[in-house]
Image (cartoon, rainbow, N blue to C red):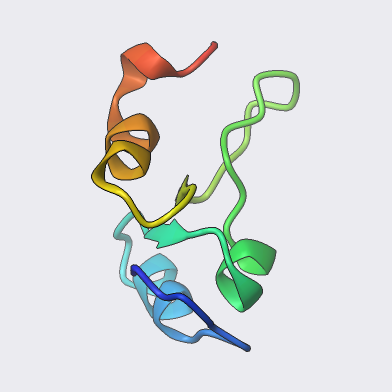
Length: 68
C-alpha cells in the first residue's frame, strides 16, 4: 500500500483478517497498526516500506537486508 498519507487505514486490517501479509509504507495509520519484525520478541504482522522508491520495497521484502 504505497500511500503518501493515510490517516487511519482499513486495508491493512482487511489484509490481516484474510491472512495476507500487508506490505505498507510507514505512514499514518499504516505505521500505527503494522509491526515490523522484532527479533527480541519474535512477533510481527507485516512489512513496512521506508520511502517511496523501489529500493525501500526491496529492503522491506528481501530477507538478506534484514538483521535477524
